[in-house]
Image (tube, rainbow, N blue to C red; front, side):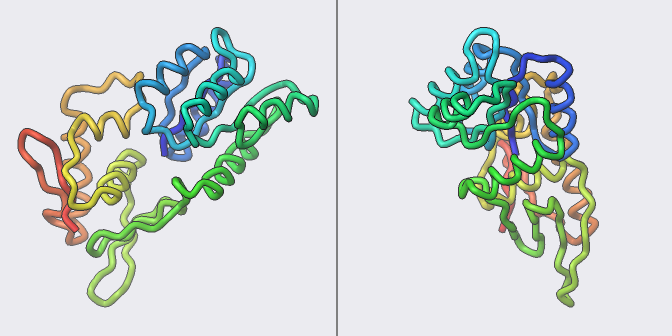
Length: 229
């Protein structure tokens, strides 16, 4: 689940960024409206959720929202603001915000509102994915292997391993390139080394092979990878 966070207050931005990553979100954090719009234009289809502060340097959160909706984007957006007047809330909702959270707020409430947005959006509604004997629960963030007796064996994956497996399972039998994986699973500002994808795929394969999932993910030389169903 990839989130665009737009917040210019450093302390609050760091706190939200840390909290979201602890919950296994992939986060791109922009600190002004112009930078946020560059993120959106560069990674238009990759975001699942957005969090916009209202008052920002450059483009305001409200202007960002209007631009987004003018492009007919249905990206779910949560607005953050210190503005608590009814007319301000109405202005934000009328501009296309899906929810509105007034500062100060608790991180538990922020996470609850994001989960609610996910449930309301059919494009990102939590679901179960199955490829072969592997079952991935996107909502509960768990992975199980079904053995021959029908019993579930839980597979512990790191955050990045889970995200990588989820991406493969959403594209079974499709070739996905190294660049597609890197762009989807790592923050735009991340300083990744050249073979980071290959290294992560290798780690994931080892875990799957220990549960009988050998050869599930094949290398397509010179292109990328494919998960066989």
